[in-house]
Image 1 (cartoon, helix red, strand yellow):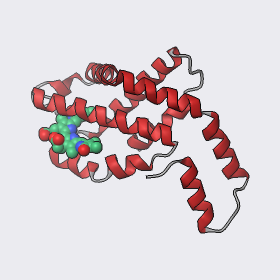
Image 2 (cartoon, rainbow, N blue to C red; image 1 turned 90 degrees about the vertical axis):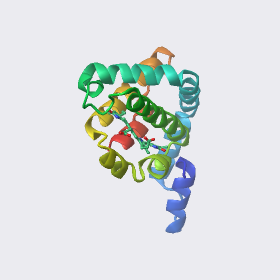
Image 3 (cartoon, rainbow, N blue to C red; image 1 turned 120 degrees about the vertical axis):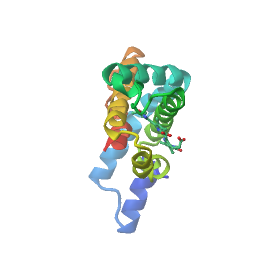
Image 4 (cartoon, rainbow, N blue to C red; image 1 turned 180 degrees about the vertical axis):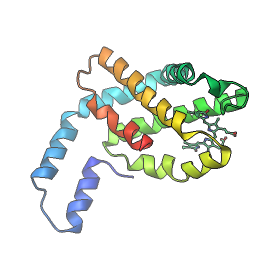
Length: 162
Ligand code: CYC
């Protein structure tokens, strides 16, 4: 698991270089958005269940057949599994936001997930949609909290859907 700083240091150390313009720019960017990142993580922690609920509601409004017989969220067991998965995506994204690095998502969330989803026939398209909806819901609420530039919020959610 890495953050912006350790990631940069290890990249530059491998090739024995001093931090150059690019490195300094990304460090400035990271520290410049630092307070907002921490505020966003605190907001997520305090509002996780309502963020998950709002995301689920938006997903099932757009893809209602998931909840019908034959749909992958049909039966409360699967419905609950889906909300739980959304909660995983949100929690790990909050870690990645603070770290300013998405490695934690690759290592802890994405490893083997495609195979799991394929074998259980969990549809990837609606999952990707849900993660993008979650990003939208979160950004809107953070803007309402006074964070004017929420562009730093995109990275983890976009990383998950890629
Ligand atoms: C299942 N989701 C699962 C399973 C895993 C994960 C491992 C299989 C085991 C289980 O049911 O618990 C995901 N586990 C994770 C992740 C982590 C982890 C991400 C990281 C820490 O430890 N179905 C839908 C929606 C979507 C969905 C589109 C929600 C957005 O219709 C999710 N995931 C879903 C469902 C199941 C599942 C319904 C149960 C499928 C089944 O058992 O038939």
